[in-house]
Image (cartoon, rainbow, N blue to C red; front, side, top):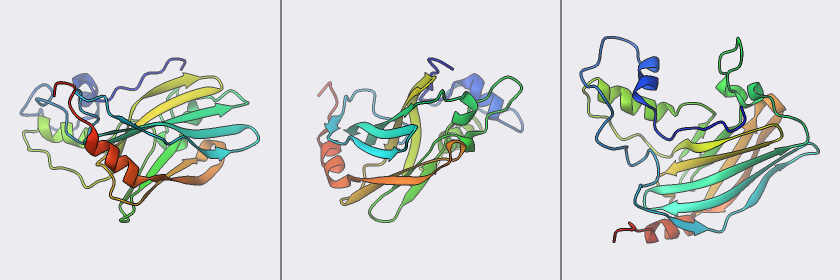
Length: 211
């Protein structure tokens, strides 16, 4: 699992593996990714000061790193450090003779100050999979109810893993609570608050590099 990569958007072949039912009306991906699927390609974002410890145990350490705000949402990193090798199945990934158990891996939750919340484990983003499924079936995909959180990259091996998540949309003013749960390592839900107002303010300043 060393160097495991996670793609932001599923490929057509991957979509067909998840797709059920009759052959779709459309072939190929939509003209562009949805606004809630990831940061705009023409923005580099605005950094927000947010580097906090989420969980610290004798043999396990998890921290939030590198928060960057964009016009449509924000990204943050999750750094995992362990004194013991982390087996791939503990992360929820498949292995020889095993199917992926996404619920066994790290589960990240987001709660906005207005009470809206969501939770994501490892694996494909259900909201994004539904979007592409509806597109291939000839439908006009509806915008989901936010917040939506999905992995936009990450990987690792041994005792070191790093992941990046994207959250849509920008949060309202007030605190943003980020929680972490890891059933395979016995980690109960632990959480920290970020400054949602600062994230929102930074995101509203993010502009296209092309002007």
